[in-house]
Image 1 (cartoon, rainbow, N blue to C red):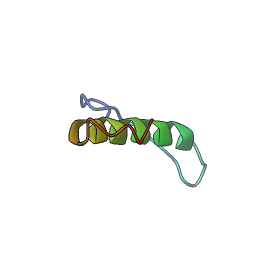
Image 2 (cartoon, one colour; image 1 turned 60 degrees about the horizontal axis):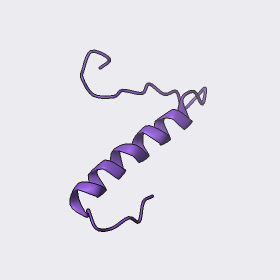
Image 3 (tube, rainbow, N blue to C red; image 1 turned 135 degrees about the vertical axis):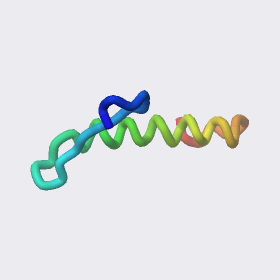
Length: 45
């Protein structure tokens, strides 16, 4: 997965590692998709 061009975040639910980074990456990705579909709506930021 790390060799792909996409942003990868490895998390561990058992050890609670990288959860905050995962949340921020997920939010940014959803924000990008939202802006493409609804460019006039500034709800997410």
